[in-house]
Image (cartoon, one colour):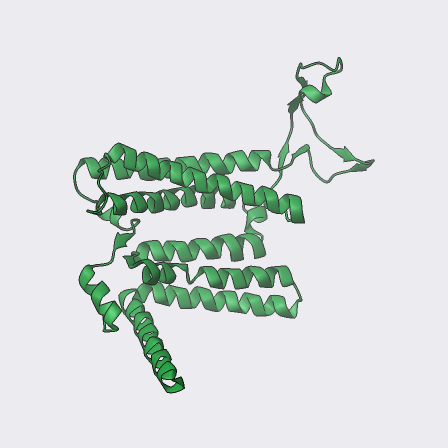
Length: 284
């Protein structure tokens, strides 16, 4: 019995090796980029281990795990992810986690966070479009959706993911004080809490040039907004990114054909012939 189990394990490991080899052959460019970025993350992780910055080490480990996502999705659900989409996902993870968090690009480059949230809205709309499109093309599904409802669902999917991400940022800030919702310096505020009469009339303060907390002046030239503007900005640009993808997707479907541009951002079914070879453990 032990011998049979060992043989089964050997067969499974050979199949796993062949799947990895097949993915490398199919995505040569993505694999090269994967190795470069992975090597950069490992270097950063080693430097942070030497510096005993364990939070950055944890970010590096999480990033290395996220790098496996495209390959895992292809193998698990038998779909095909284009090299373009795979490369963007890898670069997005690197830009958000390594450059953004560890490299402090979120602080040094004001538009860095906005760029990433816009791109995420676009990409996640593509994921939502792909999910609906895959179901819509499935003969076992007894309904057929119009192009409008497909892009509407993709848009709502993207926005829902964006909202849940903001939940994660807010929860992390409240529980661990990590400041994922970056603060914004403003120079005017309007609040009913400052109404001298104690009523419901907003009291406005303009031309704020400094803020004092517990008798200590903060090193900013205005008032500190705690995360709200950042959250609304993130959701707004996510909406723009998702909207752009949906407009392109709708136009493509109305023409009755997929554009080359759209094909780079849509997850498609793996061909049946390739799926059968994969199950048999043969070369794809």
